Length: 580
Image (tube, rainbow, N blue to C red; front, side, top):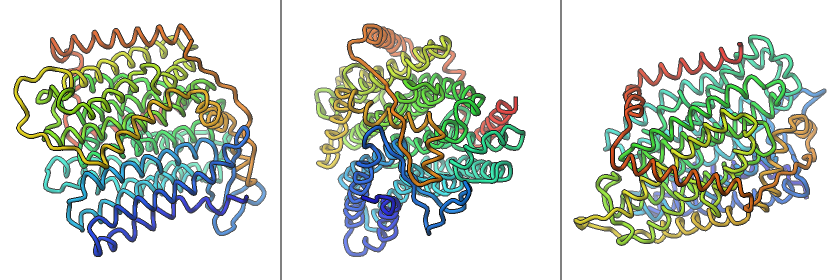
């Protein structure tokens, strides 16, 4: 079956749904979200058909040039869509989680006015289309286009509850920081076009040697800085906790589980598929340290948050850092682990944010200091949050154990980075352990003033996501062999990616990656991290915020002027590191 003509459909379908959503709301209030669910289900079906060929054998890569503008003499002028194991993994994750989050939004927000629901369905579908488009695009300018589409949707979704001043403030910060990031991505693309004569990632890989000069290195630095902003890496991270803590829980889950991954996917493709491990070695060193700093700072800030949604948002900063460290390792285990963790992060972060939204709906508060006793009063939500916390903490046999184990295996040759990654994981265990204890298992003497029941759609989404965390943990061999390893292979073989992009198709080289639950060292390390994380959580609960974290918190003043300054410094550091 010729699947190339199908490649535009997973993007066109949600865009069509977004365009019709405001019109559909005139007939029935909930109709836009119902049609959005059907649209995303159709996109999932198309992606599943494409995935059958992409993941066949050791993996395949196919490309389609819109309007029939195929490359000539190795130079691409047309707009290309590429389906490969890495992009398809993110596209399938986006469609699947997008469907569950739309179901949750329909259940959670179905009583809003018809105009509001029409706008919500429109913006959510636009964002999902942008994420799928970024997974399938094959040139830097169209990465910029999908970046901007996602940004426009995120402004409206962040400020969805206009009556809340904090939502408008967060939307303004997102507007300022992501506008700067979009400018960096556009300028980086323009500079690379001038230096290497192309925009297509495959063509740019063939011209990677031409980018060793100052203009090319500056262009790469600007691209990485722009997408690092979307990924929430330090020091571009400042918008993320405010934005992800606002809006409906389905929107917060969409941001943290999927939207930040646009930046992660773009960074992986630029550093590995466009540059390659050899030409991009300076970029990989830069990304390793940027990821490590993000992992540590995000975990430390999550450890002391009182607002549950802000805690989860800071943990997203940390997890994005872990993902970047895995991709930057440029090792088979590390990159495969990062792909695996990308999927896992989507599952358990969506689960945790939906649980936080269910708690807010039930109790009227998202503050841990005002919670407690929910294990007895809301056992279903407690079970969901506990599964998510254990998964993100790397507790076997849930999904985080396997993906984190592979990432750590990929960086074990660098003892400093490996030790810092273990420290970051211990702090993550402490942050999630503290939140789980304070919110659910701590005794509460006073009854809640009201405890609203959770909606059926919310419960369905929680069950599906919790089951996903368990299934992805129980079947690591299947996921590694058929998804993570082929995706890592196409990232680590940029020549094959370039050939498939420019010639229409390519076979992905087989890559062997192994993981075993019987590894004594992995089990011991997981046990040590859990014990030390539990002790750290106990210390913070009893003695309060550590002084070093207080100093870090003071740097985050909330002023958009300060945050722009951080971004400018980060841009200079990125470009300077590559030039050095």
